[in-house]
Amino acid sequence: MGEEVTQDKKPFKYSFFKAGTRIFNQGDKGTDIYILKRGAVTVIVDNQIVGLIHTPDTIIGEMAYFLGLNRTASVETIEDCEFIVLSGDHLIKTVMKKPQIGIELLKILIGRLAKTTKYATRLENEIAQYRDELRKLKGLKEEKKPSILEELVSYGFLSHEQMKKVADELKEHQESGTLTSLPKVLIEKGHLTAEQLIQFLELRQGT
Image (cartoon, rainbow, N blue to C red; front, side):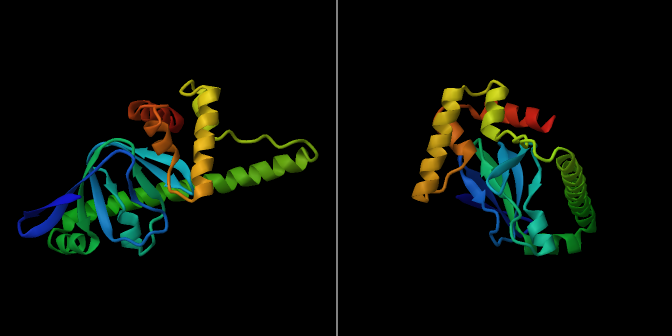
């Protein structure tokens, strides 16, 4: 998949992934760290799209290595992508020789942990708020949160007919036990282009 390159006797790989490729899965063990050079990927947690990464030089997968965890999310390409891939052990050796790199990585890790903590705190507060509201509105039907497919329709990216086709396709894959994902079905079946999916995810994230 990748072409190995050596720089200052320190090996790393350039890896190329076609659109629709799952780079790693949530729960996987892995110590490789990825640096996105070109393309775009979605971040998927519990089969839900939770993020979009398309900024060059973004580091992916470092939290699992530094915190000794399994992969906390799945990452899937929605465009042809190019990465620099290096092992966590090699990165540690580099940091020992060049502490400034370690400082920059620490800043990234702290930033991501801060975002995770902020999200968890916000979620906790929202749950408490909803619990209070439900107590007040006991007996009334709870409002259902729209799915991503429904959001795609409400934003005008899909028709209701397309939404049904995509839902049926996902159900077929689930029943047959074959691995697929919403971004893959949307793009491979021609319902959306990668650019349209990126546009939707940016709107959804409020960027």
